[in-house]
Length: 508
Image 1 (cartoon, rainbow, N blue to C red):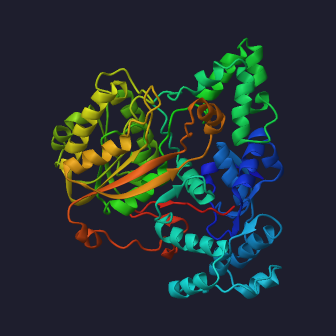
Image 2 (image 1 turned 60 degrees about the vertical axis):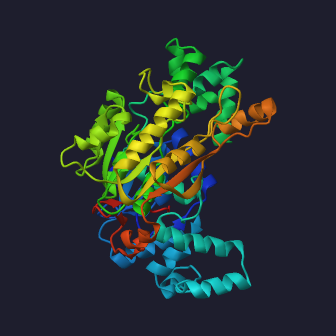
Image 3 (image 1 turned 120 degrees about the horizontal axis):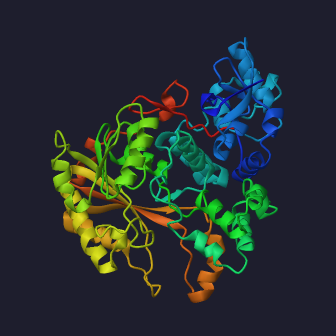
């Protein structure tokens, strides 16, 4: 048995097992609370460190943030013996992914190894027409799942008007992106949403934190068990309030929003041509630039803060081997001059950004920072930046804004969505698509009752993805290639247009 860096372990594209979200979360929690269990049950790998047994534990270790894992290397196995091991090792646990089984193994072999597969027809859903006929005659929820899987194979996520980030397929792909080492919150400062104040101002902060933790981990026994080195910190003289504050601001509860890499990936692949240049006038963290690099797009991000750009560039050097995203320090009010001043005066093939949501998160005290302005000033400059950005956009190209409505001090929505639409229309881009980005409940569960009872306000757990188009709509089909099935590649993992691999298996 060996202990190696977790990044050296490779997931197995042939693993046919899935695990439900709730069970996966429990496994992640158990690893965090009792990591010694991994030494008792190491991950089994082949001579190339490809997992033969323990995909579930590996995924959970990545999610738990472990840097090293114990492995047991099974060498000198034939390919047939490896396949047999994978199936036999998983007979009693988890849930089968029948699509993988049908594509990777012969039914006769699976039956021989103890898995009855006589009912499985690998080609049952190859014909979309026949599938639709069956659905019309006898539609059941399982058929909807199969449609979903077919579309996910081709488009990463189904091209519907709802993106559900809570689903296992989305979270699994997100974790794969995070495993690259992306830390979008670096450079932004913690607690921008003021969650620590919400908890610490409670009459009993420890009890308030426990309520919050139970929303994401119902089996949590107490706060002490969730805070690393709680008792050691206590002995060092820190108060409960200080320990809790440090824990919140250095964990996923810190309250600083982090952009979703999966949303970046689908937006780039759906709405930007290969090797096209993406303009991000409100760059923020590193996610959008790194994902653009990995999927073979050029990226230009503008941010006011030097420290944010430096943090982004440091991550780029660690993660992107080449095709580095370009960051510019300054105000996007000067976006035309900034782009014109770049070498080669690049053409902009897509705008993709997430603007400040007024003063919901305040990023700096800079007078040019939109998040520090009054709402009226914000609206004026925001419209101007959109106008100038769209003026740089080449004909027959898309602009995608991720926005969400926020309330003023009286609780009335400021209509950031409507103002984004109106600004694009004024700039000459039509409103073409709209999707709802559903997010996990998270801390909303703690706030919902108070917010609703305090004024019948619904607790918002979604954002909006607004898609605009500049040019002749009839030319979209000609300019943007048909998206091919990513599963057509024989390589393990998904090979991006840029030629780098991003493993996105959801099997365990």
